[in-house]
Image (cartoon, rainbow, N blue to C red; front, top):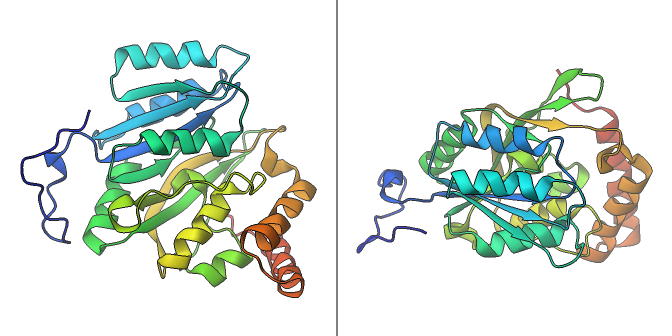
Length: 269
């Protein structure tokens, strides 16, 4: 549980004592049949140099041993909270269940097959507090099934218009401040692009999202990952433009061409 002080400290740029609270960051992790990878994902959270977090894992009716694995972690560390859906519901709903349970000021995201660098939270939270930022992200590694590893480089800042043309914000790097913008939930009708749709919603209300320096996470690409199904992803992208953002067919077509072009020339290093 959160420790609520009798008088909460000011959250101005230079007057935030983050040690005042038990929980600062709520980490959102959906899980479905992740027994082969979830241990490493959880371990990357446990190794964080910043310790004032809670990890909220929602198991979406896994058919493997994922739930049992997480249960053991939760028994050994009270910062890890485990929930389970009553029926297979998808990542968007699983994330929303976790967001609803979240008690931290900051909301961060990590999928059950991805990893964080040890200094991820420390660097990003420090950056957001010092610069008075509502929404941030970072560069990240992309790990391929053959073991090849590259860096996905992103812009220093992004606004709504830029994000429409290219989703520069990796979900595993995103953090937003609920004190500034409230709790933002994932649109369940965004068809596998719920994170992208959520970032667009935030940037309707916040002028820019800003990049924290450093490569702070690792995104795994597997042979069965949604991200490898490029034709379907184009369909999902179109759905966000037309049904979520209500953009005209003409403009959506232009944005989709720009999106495909940008994805074809990713800035890997």
